[in-house]
Image 1 (spheres, rainbow, N blue to C red):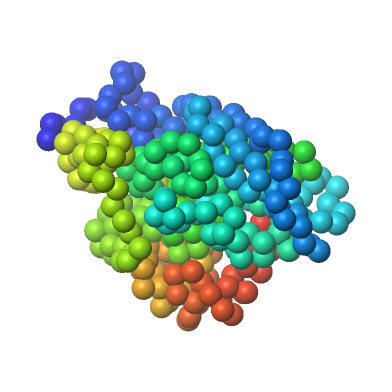
Image 2: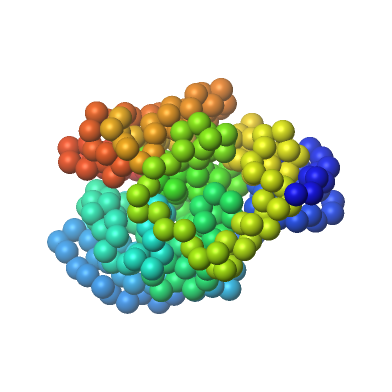
Length: 314
């Protein structure tokens, strides 16, 4: 391990580039995210909504996605909308039209357009699965998706939010503090915000399958720890990674849902995040459910969907 370079004030960019600068919040704030949806291909039709296969460009990679559009007469400004970011699923097992189908269809039935993205390396999306916590890849995919959805015809550009489950809690929170145009995010059973919380609560995901040691993302993660070591809240480099260090100038709203009996991601993550958000100008609320587990199933799912839809449409 080498000593971290002195990078300066964590609120501003360093003059000189440094190793792994691309995963820091200042760097991600400094760059642009411009994308658009490819021509739609109808996939499925129901009485309340229509689903289309589409894709968009994210740093030269083709990212597949599913656009679910409500039927009926839209509001004058267009449909409120949300980019849905999936949680951890072994990349080779991920399927565009199967995973999270109930989630996105339920929101569309409530009059909200949904762009469900397949993060790079998942399904048929190009690229290597970079990981949710120590890479900027998924955040970049999310911010490009936000741009594509925000500018799509028939969408209310002032009511486009982000919605993430599990691993995506970190992704959408980081995206939220990077792009000031994002005014609302919803997190279901999210994990890892301060990065110190990962040490405290861990994640107990039996479905996790480490990538081979020779995989590009694994090599990059090893190079990262060789350079800066494991996360250290006192490191000038690591201070620039957690979104929670960049909340002072952020406005908007955050809605969080978590079940008490979630055996994969501790509800402590959500409680800790809300305690931090309560010290800022960001409006936040946490809904706790007695049952539902990590995926918020049963009656908890029904109530969480209604609350999510009401929040996005406000």
